Image (tube, rainbow, N blue to C red; front, side):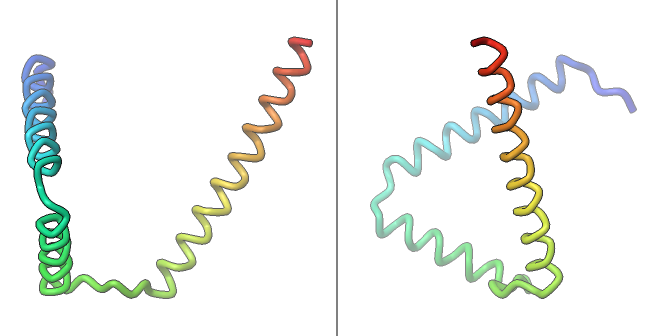
Length: 88
């Protein structure tokens, strides 16, 4: 199924408008209202079976991703240093 580019743009624009509307609502909420909303979201996630505890597998995945980010950051820093040296 091929997507029509105009439909995709309209769909994206619609969701951007929803996001802006929600952001505007949040800007007008009191801290108490925001806290209540967070608590309700947590309660819903727990009622649906989500856990705030991470499994051993999730912890391993997180560590793996963090190592990748550290590696990427070091690589980016080396590349930047190379560019800076070549410009000098």
